[in-house]
Amino acid sequence: MTGGVLLAGSYLINVVETSCPRWSASSTVYGESVLILVVGVVGLAHAYGVRRFGPTKYALVGVVLAAASLALSGGMISACNERSPHVRFLTEVVYVLSFAFLGVALGFVYFSSIECLLAAFPRRPGFASGVCSLGYGVGGVVYGQFFLALEHLYRRDVIDVPSIFYSAGILTVLMASVSIPFVRRPVHSPEPSKASKASDNPKKGIARWVIKRPKFWLIYWARTVVLLPGWGITARLKDILIAAWHHNENPPIELLSGLVMGFYIGGRLLWLLICDRVGGKNLWVLTTGIQIVSLGFLPWFMYHTGSWGCYASIGALCAFMLAFSAPKATVAAFIHDIFKLAHLVTLIIGYLSPGAGIGGLVGPLTAEWFFKRFGNFEYFFYTSCGLLTSGLFILTCI
Image (tube, rainbow, N blue to C red; front, side):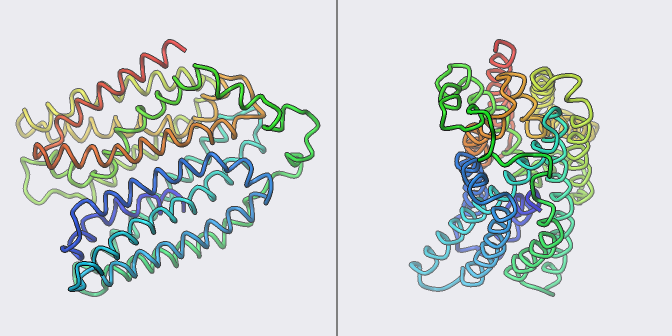
């Protein structure tokens, strides 16, 4: 559910732009970027919220807030073409704010889930975070097909855009009604408030000690830049696929999008299976290198080759998405390898989450700016390679 709703703005960006021509062209990108940023910020407080209220209640509040936020987004779109410029501006602002509320909701659900999985598999943090990330990716595929089906109905004037958002809210509630009862700590796992060790309590000083270490802030930068290009590509995936298929008319966008996202989901499953054997840090170094090589060749395939470059571009995109899934799927194993503090993994994930949120904010906006400025994504890819190289250097040195 979380993965699907998180990518709602990306899936529907073209539909919203068509339905609301009087809005500024960047509103939908702002909404998606703010959503990802807020999910990261929520991570700062998730440990205290889960400890106080429990993961089930925490996730339930997130589901209700997610459905309400999607309904609010649909309501703003229904009023986006009002004649008064003040009303149009207000609807545009509230639309972006609705994605901020949606980010809070998804943060509640995501961090509750990963808290429970890490408690269930304390000795296999890679497997635990991988299972959570795999479900996140499967949800993205399910919602993606759902949004594509509704978009076809919209193109045929069967439904309007607000109805798409209302339907997404209903689907969210239905999926959550099945999954929420399972968001709970295992019976053998003690409540954090009853833990016997003083180090289990983040207020005892260990968490502050971690934050004060230079290594933490180097990892903060590395995680931000490792995720930034992927968020930008995910947000503008349709436009990138159209550019990649430039030598052929009527590109099969749905098929190509499904293929690329299939590698994204497959990567989560692959890293889930091998992470605990290879090690989180080694896996991050390997996959960051794959991202650099893929993005380095991608602009050449897209803009400087013949018809065979279309297939090479899709292959490079698939390789990139395969590698991009690793830092998100194996973050718990990576933190465990670096800090060796198993009982504080979820708390450190929360402290690092704003970095991922910043990457989610800057990535789509940067891709949008380069596309408008140069009419293509070539320089965005090269800039991303430079950022990834800095992240790779940090990962190899820590």
